[in-house]
Image (cartoon, rainbow, N blue to C red; front, side, top):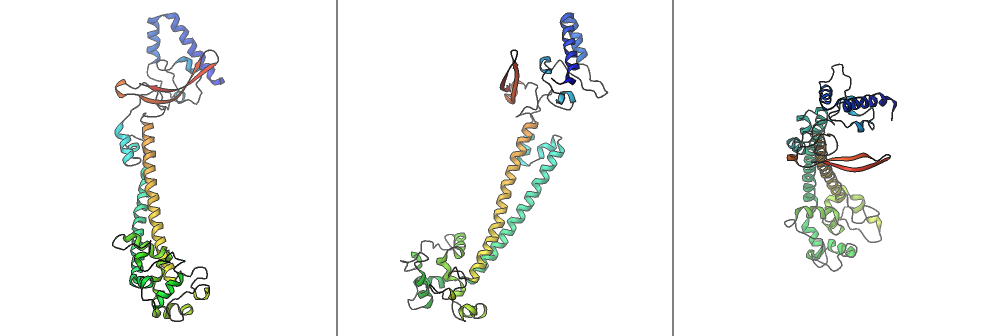
Length: 328
């Protein structure tokens, strides 16, 4: 026991002893005196009407009751509307019940999250429109179908056959035999994804079928003709480690990745917004006394049970009991 607690303990013991000697009538006088308004000099006051004297032996000088700034001796407000307000808008319940700093910080954070959310959502939409327009300009479904099951003597068809085993199309006679194929009408999002993701669709990119484009942009590799990568000859490839990569396909992949990154950031912010609401709801439930051990006064029976948190009480001479206290 700390030395600064000894005078207070002695005072309590003296008051209790006097009350026992004086009898019930005199005890009422003492109780009225103790329950009188607190002095205006700001000094802490102990209310024996609501504090168990035995528990004073366990109190530390830093306890909120000694400092006079706690709420442990008051009834829990338990305002459901404040909790629901915080679930809807983080910080709103706190602000409406007077916790302006807590509420203001949460509201500001939520506003910032949603501002960035809308920005990233718009950015992702814009980039998606850009990469789709790029694909429609530089990838030809007609040319790709010709490469898979076109005229056997056509150059693009012959080149596709050289790599059929590498791209999983050994037995494909038409584009319908390609397992990854899906029409744009059936699944537009997957259709656009497949163009850059899977090697089997590489022959639809402009470099494979537009000599004029290669004459202007890729003359060093194609020599003005269509792109025809040869097995075991990296000198005929745009990239030495990937015969199916072309400049247009790489550009398309980068554009899709940029759009996807924006949408992923948006989705992450959605989770942040949800977690902020959960945090604000739990904080408001604690501040209102629905959970935790913020308030000690019993809750009216009509309001139902409320958890009060862990409780430690002395047991016997040197023992103690640990329990979870629930007030009804």
